Length: 409
View 1 (tube, rainbow, N blue to C red):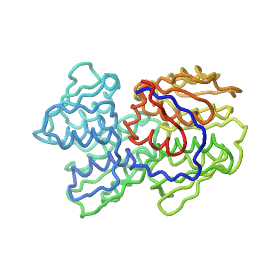
View 2 (view 1 turned 45 degrees about the vertical axis):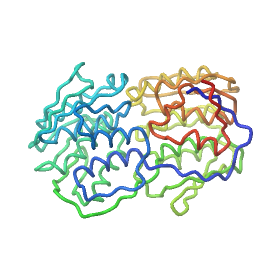
View 3 (view 1 turned 90 degrees about the vertical axis):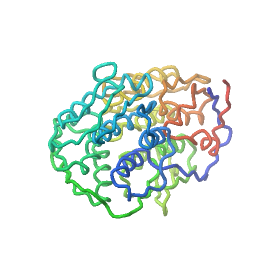
């Protein structure tokens, strides 16, 4: 599905309800398998979460998780602990080119039985579940936090718990802390001090219900829309809270640069364009929130201001090489942009080219990050259905705020 986007009238004051955080939902689904007395409300309706649920509830030997990187990492660790269960985890072509060797090596060190079906270091994986008895493991701290969280989620189910030593610089700390705080809600004893995470074993938990907060990554596109709108424009988003577990909640502070204020209401936030954006270069280290880099870069381009974004090394191994994809698509629109292996540098732009077709590279965030530019110019989005990976109602919600999307293919 290819779309043509344009905006005639922005519907200020619209109220949008966004589904639960994919990051929280996927962690809780693994924990629910370990502790069946846990109930979950407001689960994400993303493809990633559906894939994870399907793999956890199916009796099939083969589990296909599509593009769902989180599902691949979490399920690899989970199935490695399931005695007597054999699973083959496979996914899309892109998934079969996303490295997983660091996690598999750590699980091997714990005694797991995992084989590479095709290419060494990459999915598909054949996992034969067994009892893991070792209690210590080391893993690099500067890799995807999903590897670390995968180990943390299985830790309380191990007989002796688990001590995880993080080697070197640690990135994406908020996602590690999210996992810790969800474990704490289940009264699992867990500590993160210095370079070491220690998690004690726990066999059962009290019956309880956890309500998943709505996804802050999804909120980023509305922050961008308000930033690109006229002063006085607003949108209300549910359901959010000030003491969020999600690293992407740093949007509240970052988007002040663009004149956007965030007012916390009961179970919601109100985003308002209170003043014009700053003309100063935006400089941000996004090592703790790399998923909002695309949104921020497009916002800066749409406003004609420069940015230097760093801490982006994990974007090279996402659904696509997001740094190269951003460089390619923003250049088509007229941007003066350069990227390295871990940073993006955008110079001020005076004009945005119209009617450019944005390629999405099988990456949901490419489609969604560029959509707000329709407030400035007409543009196309190719393979726009890719948004269902994390945000099934995205195009419907764009229509609600006034961004018209017409199917052209």
